[in-house]
Length: 288
Image (cartoon, rainbow, N blue to C red):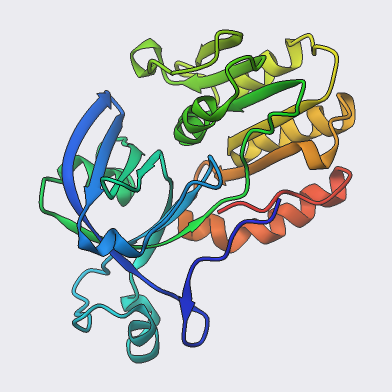
């Protein structure tokens, strides 16, 4: 599945759109929902995929950008250290009629860039972004579905569940810190949802064990498994080499890697994927 290419202009630079915060809602102790609106979203569209994502642009400290904001000019005229820093987030929901874009943020105190921004966000705040990208949507022809991930994949999993056919058979494994991080998910009647609580354990340990223990139903599965890179690598080996899930029925990739911010992960991700390809059969799914 090939992700769509964001709208571009001049020298391959994506066009930045401006979004205005309409309201902020805390869903769990560590999950904050920000709903954007504004005239700047008139050029935005999403809906083909359930894992659509956008790249949010956070100004570099002290940088002064041209008005109106033009990402191409920023990259041409300013040193790289003054370019906005990008952070990738799933489109939890896009309401084209109301022109509202919903993004859910995982927040861990003052750690990171986007999380602290979301924790401080208030109505009227503005943020630029580019996108969308994406590449996965539930296939109604699949005999059954497996969706697995950590908090970072929860918005995409929730969006996918809302796109499943009413009769779909689905098995959903979501690993979160604890029971207070669970969310009510809309899903088909035949979906089985299992929340896994890691506590002080390693990210993904419970998740990999749960998927390994699943007795796969008969028929062709379609799998969506995303999250922290180390456990995603383990899941990929399990699904491809032990359960023989065909590559075309498998959307799996690391959204992040423990110990690295997104800048560091993106720099090392290509090498990481090559290593996974060497150790495991077949190419790695591209993801944000």
